[in-house]
Every structure is written in C-alpha cells, then in structure tokens.
Length: 168
Figure (cartoon, rainbow, N blue to C red):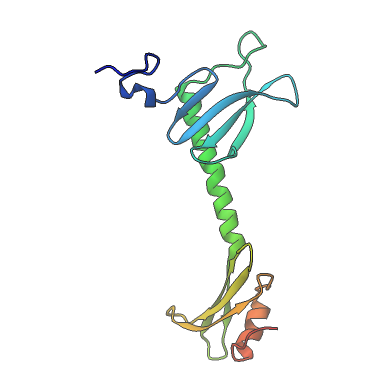
C-alpha cells in the first residue's frame, strides 16, 4: 500500500530507534554527543524519554583524529543507560530520605515506639505528618506539623511525654 507522501515510508520503520554516531535512542533513553562548551572536548547527554532535562551529562571520548567524538555504539549506549538509571535511582533515594524520617523511642515499660515524619512538599502548602506506632505497627497518634519540624529522639520523646499533643 502506498501513501500520498513520497518522503514518508509506509512501513513502521519510521518508529525505529535512531542509532547514529552522535545520536542513539533505545530503552527509554536518548544519548546525544554534544560539543563541550567548557573546553575543546565532547560530552554526552542522557535524556530519559519524556523528560525535559538530561539526567546525566558527562565527558565523551575523542575519536582517533583527536578532533571529532568517538561514535556511539550499542555497548557504550547500554553502559550510559545503566549509569543514568543509577543516577536517577540515587537521586530518588536521597529525596526519599529527605522526606521520610523515623526514630525509635524506648518507653518506660521496656517497649519501643517508632516515630515517623513524612514531609509533603506541596508548592502552595507544604506540611509534614508526625506519627507514632507501637511495636506491632499499630498507629498510636498522628498530627500535622510544619515541614521544618526536626525529628530526633529528643523531639519524639518530648512529643510522647506530652501525650502526643501537637508540638509547638
């Protein structure tokens, strides 16, 4: 079957990933070799499909002529995808650690209470939820606090000792 546009193929090959010396696509990523503005060399930018900014930008190897970049290939691309995924994973772990904290407080009866602080970084109204749980995971108390609340064993103990009233 032929279409009315001679420059557009009829086959689904137009959806095939690009695999060129300076541009490579696949596995949800695009690698683009770019001129490094900071020096005479080259860099590679890894952009996850659908994202506006690169997840990773790093130096790229010069080719044999010492002027042009080494061409991308499947092995280099796969290594770049693995590295970019790792960068994203570490960023997500760091963000999670910043937004979700917990401490354990020993009680007078020899038990332990887990106190958590979950920050909700809403653009208009950021807040945090301070919660306490018994050793079986049953919720003992929950209050809304400022996102700047500093969770520590001392602040958690004070909250518990004050009957789980909202901290000031």
